[in-house]
Length: 399
View 1 (tube, rainbow, N blue to C red):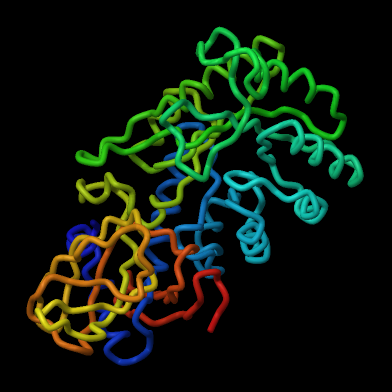
View 2: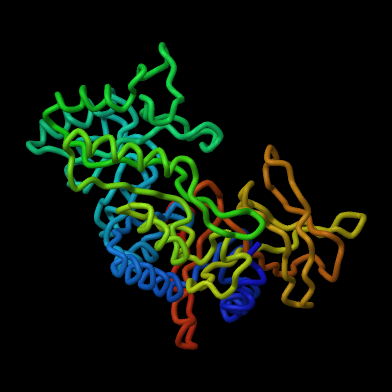
């Protein structure tokens, strides 16, 4: 998906990653991260967001919850949004500041005292039970916690496994029916109850995903969830709320920041833009963010029909892996499709000029925190003096 982009924009990364594997410095099934490029991308995004009057909370699930990378990003984007409590702990330990907790995964009630003590800017809540838990924990700690209301997404605009949230309700979207969870006026009913909770203050709303890139052209477009979030902000403003936040995550990048500002968002949540790997970057190599990682594997064995089998472990089901570069020969071999239900012990390539032991370099969309891959951090590529800075597991623990 990104092999052409990284070869065009960051060929030094490809070369050095192959050298690291050939020398035995890194094992197969390793993502190699360009620290300099990631920090440069963070600086670009921070500067553009500031120009547009937007705030950013950065996301690291895609890059392996890595302390070196977190520190580099936080020098320019100080606050994070954590996908789940384990990620929040890694981010906090690395010195980043808590921007938004509880989105996409709610904070378990037993973890609330620990995490609220960090004084996060906001906490996302999906329903009244979670709002009450946050209120109770904040009250015991002696302060009022700002919360964002997670809105239930529009039909067909929510990923499986990410369901939940408060229904907008009322006449605005026409989707509410008597007897459904949340009642006929979901958001209004939620606010009425939330206003009785002394430990929280409703500070705004969020939804996911709010922006997606067209799979063919890469063009970023707002989803129906963005319209729901805007309608919710209007509903809150009509009730007298001011200075409301609207966080509009997904596909936050240099290309989409103007869109967020124009549509009334206050916050974006860059993740893949930090590594130059949004779908737009795959088709438009002139995007400002530089591609900042590759995946390195090795030919483990050859099938009788000539197909090479690569060591797996890092092939994300939605990654869009299409080609593998064999640096020894320069061959670019097609990555064969694999069903989402498979365990990626190996990944097959089309027959070509490769042999057992060859290094293979790929570049595709990933979520490293759900892999069993190693993460190698490389510094100094931008100055022509690259070095392996550290080797970590996918959850950020050094080897």
